[in-house]
Length: 599
Image (cartoon, rainbow, N blue to C red):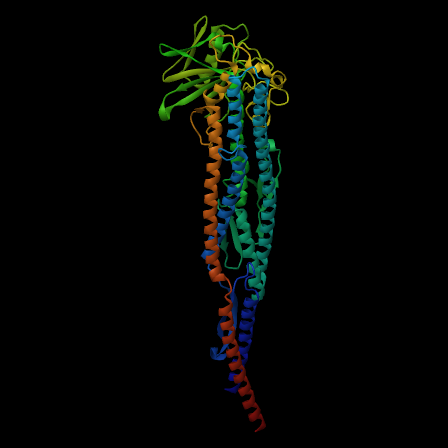
């Protein structure tokens, strides 16, 4: 009996020492990031299960809360990264009515043209127009440069984040091995804390699914099903840098077996990596295209005139005199159908053979046509256009309508228009027509006519837009007299080109439309500024909501995993009381044994 009492008390003291040490550790690590509260589990031991022993040391937390916290962490990182970049884009565009905003700069140019129309003899008024045009070009170029810098920044962030994520995967795999081989419970739970903390950190970069194994290991997978960690083996993540012209670097996942997979936005769900992929490959390119569209429309508003075909029976007639003036990049636009079934066929003048162009509109609806050699006849133009339209829109026809007309026919045609560049070169400041090149393409002072023979001139135009050097040298061209006495003065014509004449633009919010939006340059600029503000506000709202969700998930997990000092101190007092009681039992048993031995 005495021996049993002695052994039971001794086992109790040993168990209580471990429990007291665990509680003390909890108190000491209260508030430490990544630390989860420990508890000691006991089991019966000894003869007849009369004693007690430490079964294991466990961590206390809600597994569902941990998963939710990681999920919300990924979503919050994704939303915050997008909100930040959209706020920067909004700041670049400027707020509506702000004097430095994009639309305000354009309005400044329009006002200067209106003032010049009433005082064409004033050299200072002409200089004001050129100065306003220069300020606008500088604004557009500055925005384009800033957007490219943002895109380069997103690419660099991706490289850093992929490297950090790869380091975490390697470390998690190493901790997996340690967690499954260590025998000391106190050491094991410390390893598990470190591993969970690193998985949570990884979740900020990408959404991951964690599957705990029976042996204490963990399997990590992306939301798309790619295995990142399987026990002690980790997938290698690397960033292969490429030329910005090809879209920036690529993320490659090399599986333990050596197979390499390139990861795109569909493979990496949520997290900051997914956000930066979307920023680099979708958001910023869309914004750059939007700005290029504005720059292109602005330049062409001052140089191009729109010719509307007259109806002739079931077809539409274009005058040969108009079509023969078309330069590479000039277009003939055919609207077919109406409402939801409306589609647009665009035929682009070219010095090369006819081919389909892969541009913003659906495939096969934009086709080049070869400009016939001069002096071209209506039959030659009809043949060139017929070749193009048969490829772009079978069922439509182009025929010669006589010696000076070309007829476009076919079911459902609503309208046919041609956009023709009037100046022959950027240096052509002739007063024979109201239009002239105010804006040009780059240091070469090239005319903006939309040529696509050497790649779309529109692409990247915002970064190259400049004021015509010939116009800077001779501002009197702004008030040159037109060939027709009844025609508008050149300042009036240029003012109306900005404020009244409509042309086709892509959607300012980046949505996919069957047909380009027909609007004025001024209205499109206003839409661009408004769209940037709307997108930034909506994204900020989502980010705020997601941060609230993350805070709630953090609180949920913390409720089960964090250390409550008051509870731990109460538990410590109870354990110390039990320890003292066991010590008294042990003392009493020892005294009784001593009495028996002395008897």
